Amino acid sequence: MQTILLIIHVIVALTLIGLILVQHGKGADAGAAFGSGASATVFGSQGSGNFLTRVTGILAVVFFALSLALAYIAGQSSQKTSVLDQLVPETQVEAPVIPKKESAADDVPVIPGGPSSESDVPAVPE
Image 1: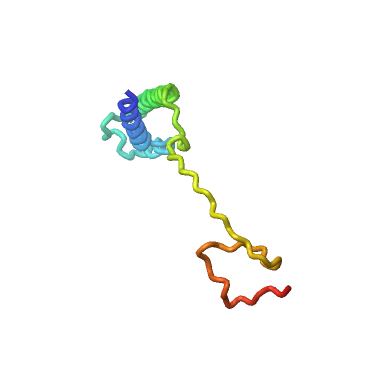
Image 2: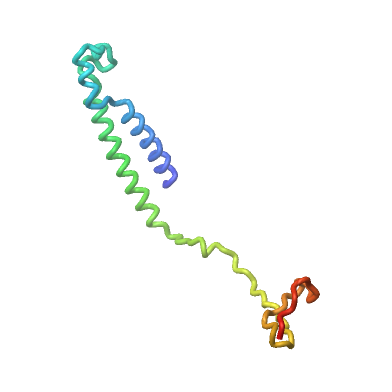
């Protein structure tokens, strides 16, 4: 049901966009006064103002009604899911025990598998 309403909603939205783009603005009436060929239109010399305005209004009401219906259906969904609920719990990994050196000058722990104690960096004087 939700999919059908969503498809109708998209069709109504695209139709509404098309009708709004087809309509003339308020400035288009000034051109008709100087004989810009308004009598040769499909809807006659009266123009398409009333017809397109009514159809646009009706489609706007249908669009808002479908928006409310889709919001209601989405709110009634019995399956409340969260992104955090979908995560797979990771297994607990124990942190490796890091041995400390005997001297007081080296308070920095040694990383297992890290660089060896023989490096180019000079030692800290005691």
